[in-house]
Length: 263
Image: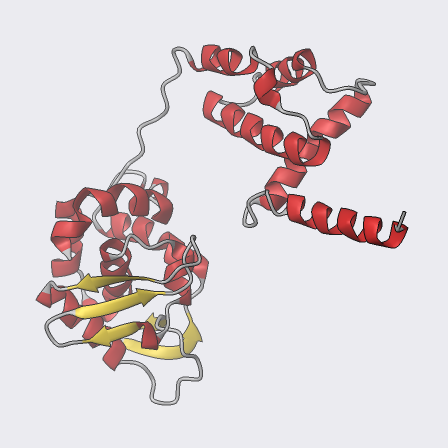
């Protein structure tokens, strides 16, 4: 037997299996698995069984809300399968148990900015202060973009065809380039106005630079700044609890509700 070849195959297989976990959230999956294994060690449990998982979930249910409990189970299901070849689908009591925990649970309704709110902000907010936010909002809603996609957007990703902006999104969740357009003339003019304020000696090729008092400065806008824009808009609109409105919520709910007709 060629042990070196066998070890090499095992190493390749191990690396391939580790990639089955989502790359972006892998640290959270690993943390969840480690916490479960530490709990098992504390309880002197050697073998993972259906009853063991039920006991663990029951203990966690005293501090976690049903949606979080479901997420915990999903991460354990994936990591146990990858690391220990345990198929939790063979444990028929787990899903009914989780469903029973969700009975009667009502999540708090999230606040959201509607079409009228966005139109009011775009049309009435002072460009000297809010032009960056308007540009981010226009592109974000038109392309249903995530914060990561917005912060990485480059000048060359936007092609101005006078009556339409053609926008490429190269770094997407699926790792495939996609394209969207902005054809609303008022929105096009806002994007043009922001781009025209770019410093001539800017050292970054990123589209979004820091904007202060009607001027762009040679400093990239970070992901946290992008993320807080919806709450700042909500504050301008005098919404109750504006900090509860955040980018992922806006991107998921608002873009799909009227993004097509607003572009």
